[in-house]
Amino acid sequence: NAGVTQTPKFQVLKTGQSMTLQCAQDMNHEYMSWYRQDPGMGLRLIHYSVGAGITDQGEVPNGYNVSRSTTEDFPLRLLSAAPSQTSVYFCASSRSRVYEQYFGPGTRLTVT
Amino acid sequence: DAKTTQPNSMESNEEEPVHLPCNHSTISGTDYIHWYRQLPSQGPEYVIHGLTSNVNNRMASLAIAEDRKSSTLILHRATLRDAAVYYCILRDTGGSQGNLIFGKGTKLSVKP
Image 1 (cartoon, rainbow over the protein chains, first blue to last red):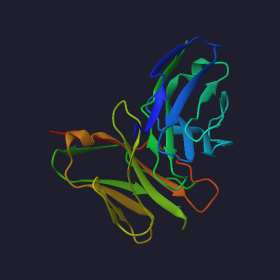
Image 2 (spheres, chains in turn green, blue):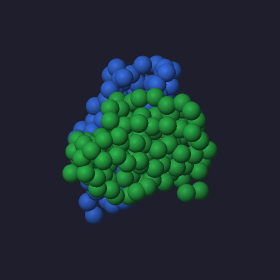
Image 3 (tube, rainbow over the protein chains, first blue to last red):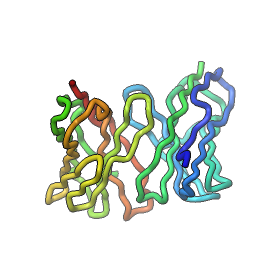
Image 4 (cartoon, rainbow over the protein chains, first blue to last red):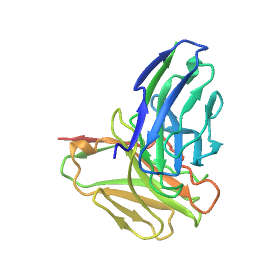
């Protein structure tokens, strides 16, 4: 099993550009989520999904969109990048909300 | 969401036991106590979780106070690889959320 994979590892965007961060898992997990982590801080939940076709907002959803068309994939879209979105982004998955979550290696995003 | 309080940092010597405390005075009956850790430049990884009884696994032990208002993560013999930020998180499995809400955690340093 590859576990949770994220691409790209690093990305630099200009203000106003859009992009999609990819997240995939091969464990047939129903629950997937996206977090961001700013320097010296804990992780903050952006969006989550409890299964294909179902998504919901977390603590900091503004400026981000998600969709879940398959169990395996949960992409995060930045609609119009802003410097405040400079952060490290982590994707995670688990069998359900109540089970342990497995995290990907992260995507380091810089918006100039 | 019920909150947790952890020391900002702790130090340990290699091969000695480490006791990482966590206070959660507002814990509810359906909250599980979860511990995750984050090694430098990596995504968080699950360590252990429990509800009322003490729990052991290959990574650590979790000691939960009888009134459940505090808990302690125990690493029996710290290694250099255990240097990480440790997060104590309450996870409400009885409600509609159950998402992980991260605080700032405890940064553990291990000295050779």
